[in-house]
Length: 397
Image 1 (tube, one colour):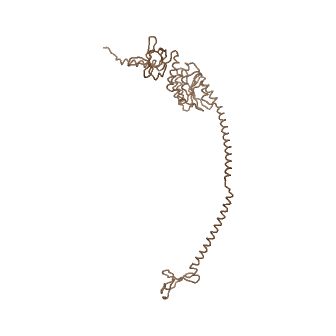
Image 2 (cartoon, helix red, strand yellow):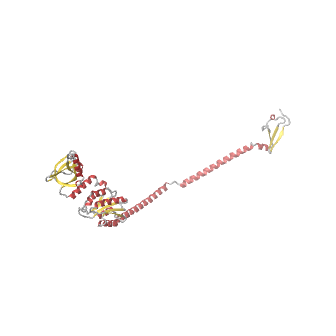
Image 3 (tube, rainbow, N blue to C red):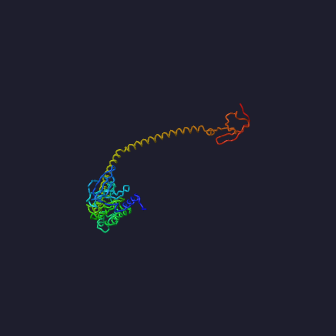
């Protein structure tokens, strides 16, 4: 009995076989567009034809973005080969279309540029200003070329206060893409770099191609430090230039862009110092004049002190005179009261020969004969003391 494979197993095997081939996952295919149609969702379906051979293609709406597609046009497409197992069809999922004849490298450049621009890597709003006075400048370039030497010369001449930190890397060849991306990453990890220059001297399109690679573009985009690109000559444009915060036409121009001119800074500081001195002097002179005017107004508004002093002196004399009269009147009243008290003093009466008799037991003054009984004990007070007495017999009236 023969072994039979189910259709699903064959379809899954073919899908895995085709989609695991790296040569078919990132490829350019040239041909003539036929059987062009569009779905309601905006997807575009067409066939690429060459002589008797043809391949089905689909371009989804998110990749299409209004790219011009016409039947009969000879185009260069980029995409991945896909096996649609449900129908047993092989098709190319296209993400970019370029008119044929442009060249593979230019087509790849336009494809990546369109892709990254759609993702926002070129947006001007995300690009950062460069630091005004950088103290540490990172440079990603080859250590052996003239580029690094030229950058250092310009920085030394313009802004000798800065420190240049080199992240050495090949700028062309098999290791260049990884080297440039790693250099940007290492300078970011330093933690004290103010700005990064990614630089390379002039060359052909092939020699500059490192800076058209997606890996380098995303490394620049992901940098936490502002990046200045300086690739080739003034007319050379790379993907790195579009992503960088600032593009300089040459490496030397990049150094001039990131570093202030110390001579001009000195002149600016001198001008600002002179302006500050002038302003301070003007303010001081104006303040002194204002102070003098204020002093004059203050003097004019002061009261007549002499007149007020005279009035105060007169008031004090009147007050003192009134106080003396009041004291004299009080003294007179006190003297009168004192005389009255002295006249009422019992001791004065005793001094004239009178005596005060008191019952010894009750301490009552004897003012009537009726108060005294026979044998009553008395105290007789005279001016210099007292002496006891006793009633010898009863008196009565």
